[in-house]
Image (cartoon, rainbow, N blue to C red; front, side):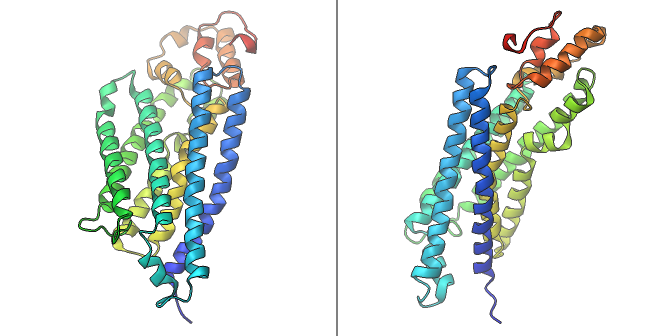
Length: 324
């Protein structure tokens, strides 16, 4: 029985990509709905997140369409070329539709990294904003290299897997994955440190929402970082499985930031204000009366924007939800 590892890896990869694209689609519309209906979120931030989510969805749609079209050309339209589908695949890596798909994924990756850089700054700005200097430099370098790599992959004789003179792809992958490792570690560390403070303010159920394992994994985009490490390893080794990893990592480029936006839209995401508040020594909290402490919990649970906990900390009388 013939074995076709490259074709199998590519086929499974685009299938999983299509399945997770459905998840991305649902999360995008859910985020837009919650943001639009939220009475507490400002118009500017609301429109920004909706536009950001829509842009990620469009880029992901382009990437998936290009992958599917490449598969159609490879397995149906030109299946009888000399050498079979694998030969067609290798000979057409610089085709316009494959380059377009690469450009869409790289652009989505830049947007996702930009969001991670902003949130990393938000998590650490109260401590020292210069902490994000290294991630910022890595972000700029990976963005520039990603653009150069995309252009090179579309030139005659070039591809995502081998350059014309110098292959830029391993360097780009190393930079963007290093960026994600650093930002993920910084955000996760900050969340673990802050979680000790919020246990003194919120009830156990709400603490799990903000500092549970799932919350930390989503807020720090840990799955995306781990998948990137796996993809880089298989790519450098030249394994056929790298095609599957490329598709899986490619959809998480949009899925991870979209999950963060969904948490924000549902009032469960961390904001700069909450990080600033709970990142400090909450000495005043120990002197809060039980009634005020209960108001903190009630207002945080009723929040959609995820930023009303601070205002509730200063409250001395109950306020209705439309006054928050």
